[in-house]
Length: 95
Image (cartoon, rainbow, N blue to C red; front, side):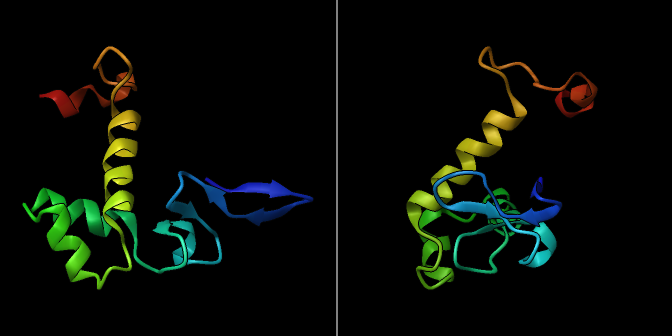
């Protein structure tokens, strides 16, 4: 996920709200200007927390729009335009 310029790793913008910066949380995707990792939000959504509950739980540091972007990015990285798994080796996910 790192991009390099002149051999130095730099931040990779994954969306309007999400960045992977090797200097922040070991390069794991986080919300810009925070150390809140995207996996934390995805896990909470998977546990049934609502978008509004998460915005409140994180004190507004992760906006509703940022969480919706997270869901969109997760979906587009898992599925192609036809709704099929993007990566053939991920076929076990559908089982």
